Amino acid sequence: MSEIYRVDVEITAPVYDTEVTSRVLDAVANIFPNADIEEEFGEIRAEAHALDHFSELLHRQEILDTARGEFFANREGDTFSFALKKQAAFEDYVNFSVGKPDELGEISVRVRVEEPSLEEYVDHIAPPTEDGRPVDA
Image 1 (cartoon, rainbow, N blue to C red):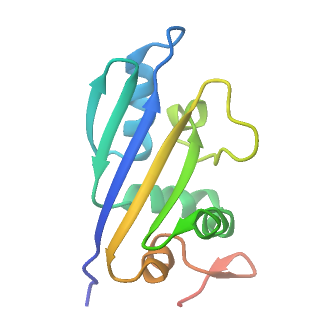
Image 2 (tube, helix red, strand yellow; image 1 turned 180 degrees about the vertical axis):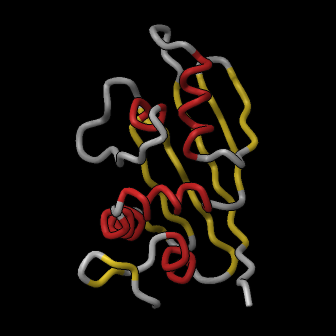
């Protein structure tokens, strides 16, 4: 039986004068290919309702524990947020932006979970691991 997930994902990324808008758009689309992306003056905005491709990248790169740490560290109620480096995203690679803000700006992601619980959704996209391998929650 497959679970039904109800989530709203808001994605924003600044586009600086020194950047090519299409490259920032591609960076967002690489990580979130199912997002509805809009170009606004100086910013890319996108909305999605699933993080399947993002989850696949986390598994492929074997950074599930890092992702879980970021998600739970930036949790507020039924919402968690995180930031990604644009250059890495352009290369179809997840690199969390922590500490000092990136000079190129970041892709900011805010995820609000309606169903199931936030913990269950995080377990779905970035399951807990044991010895580096995903385990069933």
